[in-house]
Length: 372
Image (cartoon, rainbow, N blue to C red):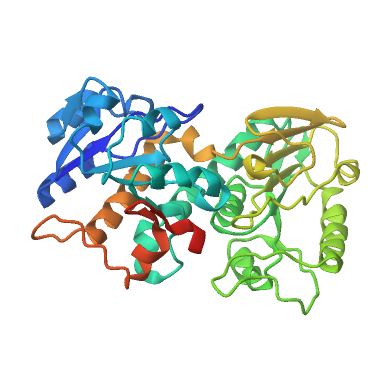
């Protein structure tokens, strides 16, 4: 069995789906590894390191993929990469499947078997494979660092002979994995941290990290059975808007992380609310690729509105590619370990396994995403 790894070609993508350390783990199981030359350079891993770990360095993506049984990637294959793939090959990546349903049909037509790690179920057995958690952890940390780089204020309280500098006030909207890491990071930097989430049971987590939770009193059910946020009523949205608007008056940094799987990102801050913020404030919109949590934000762009910088970046993990790649590569390895018979190294597609049934979006020419 051969596993192929190729360069990520999407703009601003610096991660790689395998590291030299994980290469050794695959070889110990009995796999051979083909990797396109330069695939890990942006993440800080050289061809020499991969070669020492036992991988075969290939001159192009075409050569790496040619005889591979499994192709592992950070992002779903592009149209050009689909042209290099052969029927029956297995593709494992972040397909952003629920947002790319029409695109998935291309993989089915090619007779590929595809696993979307972004669809992993939220069960304890899948935690070691959870790319969203591992990458959002990195992204939440980077969001705070990025915001403070643009903020013309110091983050911590400073008491000097020349006077006292008050701590920066940071507001986190959405307290999933990225939001909680952002809270922890902002607190470590000395900022005062506030947080809001439509799920009231996240209050305890926020407070355990030293943040102050902005609570919205309601009896409305605001999360799905598997713990994700769900669309809320207009009445709840009105209450949330009022609470956030009030908090913005004293806020120096806002980090928005709110996403609803398969849906456009909810607008949490509109133009009118921006007028409440102090001049020179900074917003990092981590949902900008999905429509954005901030009205007018654009992915991979910095815009100014009323003297406030709005930075759209939905791929902050890629800005710390060495660490992000290490975690992503381990997630994929754990997934491969689960779907392969360790004795024969043959694929063991047991659709009674919740992990397999949830993540397999294409098999034998069928687009299984249509049933999800």
